[in-house]
Image (cartoon, rainbow, N blue to C red; front, top):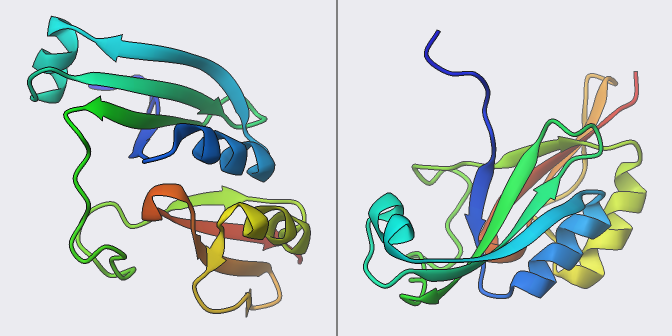
Length: 146
């Protein structure tokens, strides 16, 4: 066997506290926060002088994790275009199953959650939508209805 599990997905954000608030409102829990710097960080990330603040967020079932990272040094660079479309190469989205899509959207909108278009019904089995969260990452939300 080559891997044991997927441990986490990292998202670089410009405001760590706002991102923590957003993902907490989504239903995730803060597992821990830490400052990261030093030679091991430079070697791992491939940058010199790395200083970052991270918050590890955990899904309620304990299996999924997001590492929210704010780079203090070197400063994070913005993507081009600043708000890439959903078909941009690379990380496409992170998907979460939710128990009440409308309630989830109500909680996330005041924290910057911007729905890309509208909630869709997939064959009366799921209600789905894409929205942008902190760092411009697209989240997919799915509520099972059938």
